[in-house]
Length: 70
Image (tube, rainbow, N blue to C red):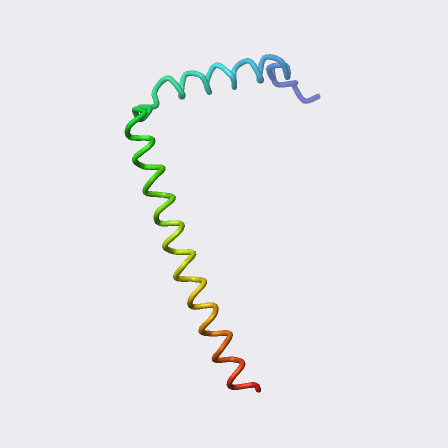
């Protein structure tokens, strides 16, 4: 006959997970408001520039395929 392991109940596992999550979040070094705004601006600028580059490349490749096919 196999012995049953002493597994914690579902509620105990959820409580343990929550405690560990809160403990890890306390270790995080959160950015200041100024740092967050600065990094957000950088992300937005890079996103806009990359979307413009990809849009131009898409247009050029579409024209090139159109010339080759048509």
